[in-house]
Length: 113
Figure 1 (cartoon, rainbow, N blue to C red):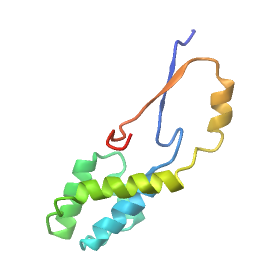
Figure 2 (cartoon, one colour):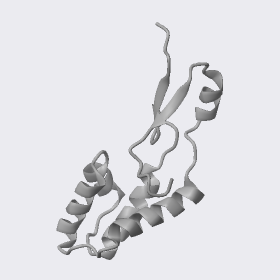
Figure 3 (cartoon, one colour):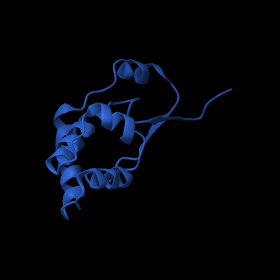
């Protein structure tokens, strides 16, 4: 079978942003009184939409988020990605070795792109 294109997911395949964004989410959630840690975030938030995670945190904190909460989260995450995001080990070698066209599919927000 000849492939016309390979579509890579971004997080966990090309880069690992989950830990970076989770740390920011935890810090912001805890500042509202949610009292969660990385283990809790991994169990309850991985694979969930940002909106459902925010609703979950609001219930834990027993208070509504400030109006700019989501934008603040996105801004902090974007800044952290700029300085901390690293490629998955071996991905450069793989991309250099494949001869099939490829692209990236991601559910990342387009706000900062």
